[in-house]
Image (cartoon, rainbow, N blue to C red):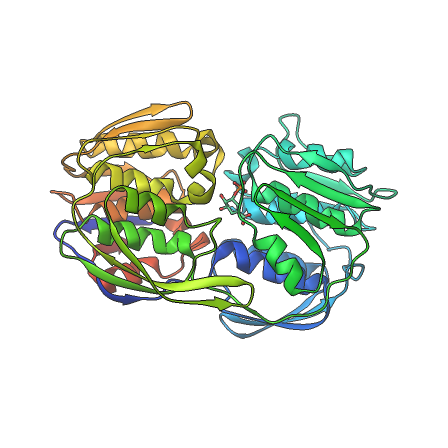
Length: 436
Ligand code: S3P
């Protein structure tokens, strides 16, 4: 698994029209809510990345029939809020923090015990942030002494709604609490320091639930049922981000990314790239169900460094690895602050990106909550993705501006979020070869 290496040759470009795979966040939620709904739901554009497949397998293990009519087309036979069955084994959620934190929220309300496990990276990630509010609601959860997975979830006598002020802006935490809140007595409310992505709130509504939602706050009343709904998943803006940055840093490149989700809680990458001087147009805006989408046209040119403060972080949280590459190609300095969350993602993304950029000859200084990157020449060399899909894809894109080849180690996990990345990128003009 860990021996996939990317080799990127200099001199590539990006052009044409690209449709990246379905949104990861929305695909997870579609399987979860469709499973808990009454009736049959269809999901189109489902992301067949390993993270979402872990969610699908977990629900199948709990007795939900999910037919894969085509790789990205699911028919989910919902069992209702109380229809899940005890799985015959621990649920292995692989690399997927979203699966673990959201599922913990809904599993604390079940009448059977479950054990959630993950890979080495997921087993290091902080779970206290979701466990703590759920315990306040009356849940019973056992963790390791370091508040990490495996999580052992035990049936509880009854959950009570809470008003929870989350110390972190995290859609995973917010969503886990809201899912528990569906089963709780009374009202459940989550307040956040910055607005995190609101896909759960939008999709709960699509499944017939009443949800109060505004930036930084979400609430619902317990005891509501979900009704089956059909979901069309937009292309993932977080996957599109690699192509947006890739085209933006190559003068003369021109690319169209189709059907991309442009939910305002996710479009920080577009805002930040525009502030750096990138030319990005939103064409043909429309809706896929409750989610806004558009085709994104990007034209390469000169970028300049900027200051990126905490107010821009939540809406671009997964795009910082790619944005660090944009900063390395920009004129002047880019300073990122208020982004300490990057240290507890699939890898420590601040450290992994700064180490990799330095290996390519870029001045990149890691700070506790961000980095200071001086744009300039990218030479070439070997970087370690640390098994993090987004670090691997970011350095692949860096190859567009490097003077020498870049070797990227440990790239197998690209499949967690972006199956087919190498083929799609090579087809658009990146000089990328995969070595197994
Ligand atoms: C996600 C939320 C984000 C993001 C992750 C997906 C989600 O995490 O980094 O890739 O689907 O809710 P946090 O909510 O923990 O910031």
